[in-house]
Image (cartoon, rainbow, N blue to C red; front, top):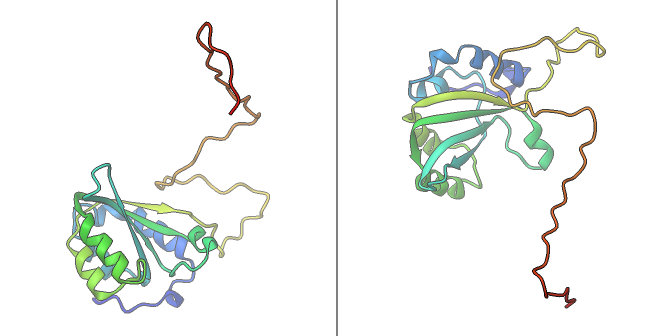
Length: 173
């Protein structure tokens, strides 16, 4: 099945990606082409990430809109981790060649053979179809999303002031 879908056929991108994550065992350990053929939404943008070894692409972010403003980066993003890693030199070249991450058939061909290690949703959005009142907290989920710890009280900053060695005076420049 060829990916001929448009975003109009998926009214809630975040909920759709959450469905993919709920079924990610169908894709882990398989080529990206398996997932891309099943997608009911069109990839518009990709952004490769390297490890400390800049020759190895460890993960790629896939967006379903082409980001134009910084606000577009708050849209749901599908993060695919690879094993084995992909060739970062090739993906960087494709990123540069295709208007800074535009999705083309050449890009799709490069990623099609990448083996999926994990699928993560970044920037999950509340469902537009939700009937839960705004005052009720959303139900707990088990999706792989990043949640940063929050503190209830402000933390005092720690200031480290090194002492000057004996006999050395402060100088202003």
